[in-house]
Length: 70
Image (cartoon, rainbow, N blue to C red; front, side, top):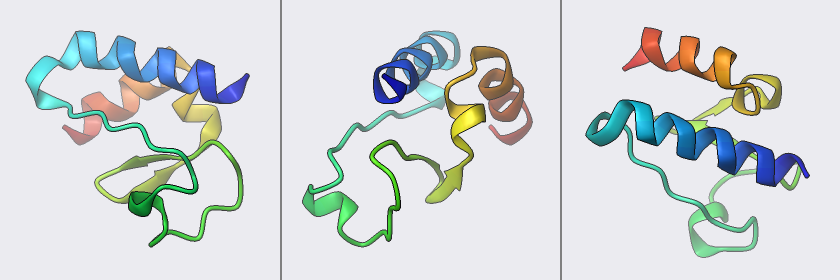
């Protein structure tokens, strides 16, 4: 369920930030994910830095994070 929530929040942020935000979604066994040492099934990165899952799954927290980092 966490993965679906993170995807929903990410899509909401894409709607809000438009071309300022690029979203890519991969499975943990994809080629793109192999370079990272992910420890869980849901991982969200911003500029190659891991975002805490409680931020990535909360619209308000992620919006605040992005507003400070974009």
